[in-house]
Structure formats: structure tokens, C-alpha cells
Length: 250
Image (cartoon, rainbow, N blue to C red; front, top):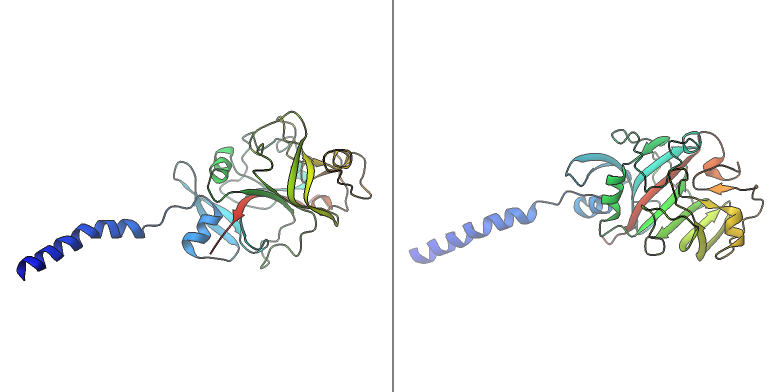
């Protein structure tokens, strides 16, 4: 009996370090990991960890796009988006207010974006307009909205000196929309943010034709020519929000 008791105790002691190790959660690098580890579903600010294991505050959206978790990587008002500081593709390191997330002048460093994109749960990127952090869902609808998989466009953090036709999950510009259609995206150099030029979209790739476009109209970024009917560029304080995310399974 004594031998059995000692053997049992030794077995428990041997397993205890394993058990303790098993319950220590990984430090999340994306909002999808936050949701998985902490079982949360409310939009808000959560702590993420960069590639050096340092924590930082990021905004997570779990509500606006059913089935997806999104990490905010950039949010700029029209005034800031049109400045030379932010007319840069995501291939360039141009961080702003990383420690104080906000909606008018915010961009993560390229290192943080890379860590988020390289996570197994990160399969897509998207752009939204005027995301409302203080509302339950953040977006009322998908008007003026873009969602693309990294599989369809693998130049998000790199540059390419030409338009790239990408089959997007969904795009909506002023109510004109399509799913699984080919749209030209441009991400090049230090003088152009990732964006879509509507005249280029009308004449190339899947020929996405948005009525009443202004000459040279840019949407979702760069903004050398804008239309005040597009909600990201309706006023100087309108915001364009860029995210990296992916599908989650609870």
C-alpha cells in the first residue's frame, strides 16, 4: 500500500509542471488570438504582443463582420491621409501614435503589421470608412467597404510597380458593389498608399464601373482626387480604417 501511495505521489508531482505549463495562455499577437484565448466578443481595446514580446494596445473588431476578427492597423482622417507622411504603401515603416490608438492619426509600425499578418489566423485585409468605436457593431452596413484575402493579393507589405488585378471577396463604393470580382490594386513606392483608382477599375481587370466618379477618383487611400459622396472622403474629418484579420471559429 505504501509503495502504491509513493508511486501515485511521484506520478502527480511529475505531471504538475506539465499541467501548469498547459494552462498558461500564449501571448496574443492578433485580435483573433485574443478572442480565442480570452473568449471575448465585444469590440474594444485589448493588449497584443509584438515580435519582441512587448505588449501594446490595439483595437479589435469582433462584431461588424460576422465570422471575422479584425485588428486595426491604421486609421487616418482625410486631412492626414492626403499628407506626404501617410502617402506610403504598407511596405514602408511610417508608425504614428502606436501607444495611443486613435481614429484620425494612427498607424502601426511595419514590424507590428508583419507580426499580425504572419499569424496563422490572418487570412484577409479590409478597408472601412468612419468606423464607430463607441457603437456595438462599429459599422451599420457595408457601404464603402473592401475585403480581400492575402491569397488573392500578396503584395500588402511589399511593393509592385504596376496595378495588380485581385479577386476581392467584396467591394462597395457608394452603393455599387460586387463579390468575387477582379479589381486593380496599387501598392508601390513611398509616395502612394495602397488604393484603388476608379477610372483604372472601370477600364481594366473585371471592369468595375462606379457611376458618377470624378476624374481620377481614388478610393480607400492616396486621395489625390476625391468625391465627397464617398464616405471616407465626405469631409476633412472622415476616416479610412485599415485592418488585418481572418475567420474565427469559437
